[in-house]
Amino acid sequence: MYRKIRFEYYQVVYRTKDDTKHDRDRLFDLVQWMDKANKKSLEGRTYNYRQEQARLDSSYWDSELNYYFLHLVRLRDTNIPSKAKVDAIVEPMELEDDEFIGEEVSALYDEDSHVLMLQRNKFSLGPEGIEEYMNLLWDSDDEKIYLRPICPPDAFALARKATEYRKINIRFADIKSVDSNRLGRFQSPLKKIISSFNEYEGINAQVIITVGNVKGSSLDDDTISDTLNDLQENPQFFSKAEITKRDCDDSRVEILDLFEHKAHDFGTFRMEKRESLGHYAIAEEMWRIYSGNEGCANRQKDINSFLR
Image (cartoon, rainbow, N blue to C red; front, side, top):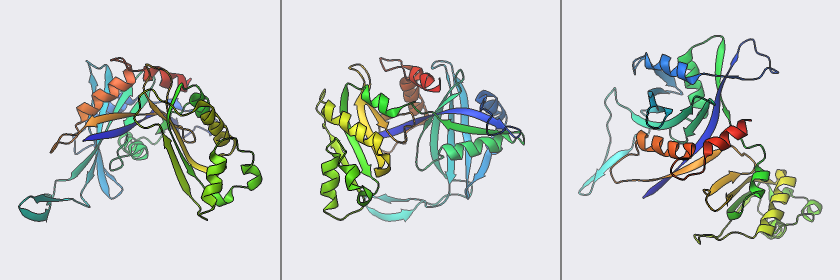
């Protein structure tokens, strides 16, 4: 079995209590925060988080990979799974008073650009939860830490630079709200798709078009170009639009969110039976994606260009 994990990119910044809304964010030195955290015991850096608990399990400098890494965990003691045997009925898993289900998340930190590459795990801490945890540990009345999403400057421009389109995924917001006169100006097949969906008298719909697993194949360039124009000019009619693309032969296939174009990547991991996916395996994959080693595209360069 294989598991796909999403990684998102944030810049770690802070604001002081005297800053106005017109003042720019200041870059936060997360290494200082890690130093403060590492001086505390595991129990000392465990904080209440939404009726549960959260903590930083470890943070360290990896001298081989040349980046900082963080390993955080949400400590869950509700909705506990059961366990079963082939020859016995299922029974609840009982936890001791000081035991929890650990929902983990890993992060890579680039000290030079203050970039945090963050694993997403829907069962663990999200960016808002990690931001809240960082402030609890930092415990400052004068400063507040923020994780600012890093976004490409123009997702549609990036999409048009691609040489290969593998898939397009579109979700409509409210089909019945599409004005017929406006629909008549659509240049792509979306016009016919919306018209045919209206015959069902439904409100929402989603369409996914893909080339399948045929290597080197691509959706039609002209049709994709017309579709991108329709999406960009009529965003109110769509709640989601993602395109899976490749920029050149030696680049990786990338999923680009055209409306919420938060910079992100995916890693694929082989899952062994009776084993959990460990932090160090995730950390190594993050390094491989971000650093541009082993023939991968240099994601660090891309992210820094988005910041500029």
